[in-house]
Image 1 (cartoon, one colour):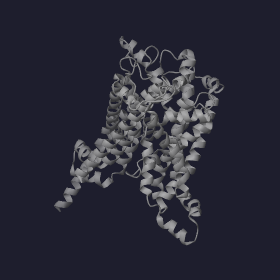
Image 2 (tube, rainbow over the protein chains, first blue to last red):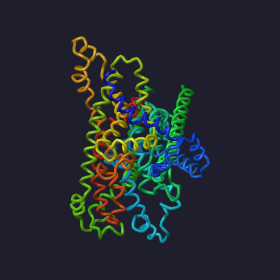
Image 3 (cartoon, rainbow over the protein chains, first blue to last red):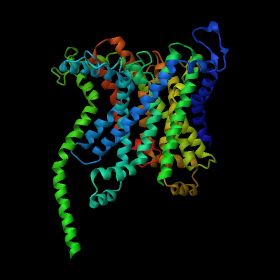
Length: 283
Length: 289
């Protein structure tokens, strides 16, 4: 127990105490760059302000859309890629390495590389293909900026799904697959009625961890769209950042942070319960 | 007799099917190669561009007419070196701090006689669910008040606090693999718990602990949110430099690609090395890695 104390203290100081402070700060009016105004207790006014602001609902909607769409696409692609990688063929290790690499690339670089050499409308491949086809380049950072964010997150997180789901596929005992083959089960039947159920546990873990991480996404948005135009591609973490460090309205930012935590925990709990119930039904 | 024939036929079917599938598989193999190259294309093209002269960058092409290492030479004389050094110091020290504080906790959780060890484990786990925005405002104000803002020490503190739970999460399944009898027999030899930790547990779980360290290194090296909010110049890490690069440097894409290649290389290599243990550790043994 004595051994655990330093870790408990550090983690508590860095994560738990600040959350309580955030909770407290969400009840005050405090604009850091205006010390003349002081700190005043305003009760739930910050929350009232949030729930009556149109921006907030847009950001919540964006967060939900980003999370759901990218997790669904990641799951589907993760299963497909894993199935393709779960065989022996020339260069399987290189292919595997190519597919999982994006996961280890820092957000800042991933965003900048996509933004410049790939999607830039005049000098990137986007502009190149547009001029080749004689069309206007796709507007990745204007009207379609939310779509762009979803693409980038999917690109980064599909490898993570592949890592986990592939491990699941490789765990299926060969006898199971052999007996299916002798029975003459078709490829699709084999996939849906044997492989997917066996790796369901892996898929669930990937989705759950994916949800935890995707809800925290910040860097990708910061370096590509800056949440814009307006708030059209901002998620909750970016919204908190913007209120806190661009407006210096600490109380308001803290209130948004509290709401973000509540939404995050509710989403995780809901997904977790759904998975547990599904298992209860099949058992 | 009849049985025998059936088995023979089945065997023949199998051989035929295997022959057919050998040819059959070629389109599939080509497809997966294409998918992989396309998926990694932004990174591959980044690598290609880093060897181009600035004049050859536009229009985009896969061909490098005059390959050069000049971008790397220029970039390595640049201020980026300082950021890389800061990042390295912060990452390495955070990894050691996380392991030093975290692994003993896992040891106590797995082998100790704590009454609420599950509760303690889930408490640590639950802290990883929270988005960093939940703590950033108070942490920023606290750092500003205490002079930790924009210092290496401050960043190491925050990364240690954030990643200790990850270490506990990851190493638990590795320590669970160590057979209890080994520890019990060393207990009987009269060696203290602390001695058995260093003499028995650490060597046996070495592989898993090293992979955990690699993962924490990747997380800290790549971390963006805390770094952008808590540093300016003195303790700014590589991601912060990258984020400001475009505004400073305009359209020097070849150099941008050279820097990017340099800074994504270390975590990528470590990631390839640690990938298998990563799956096992992160899934908490809920699934087998």
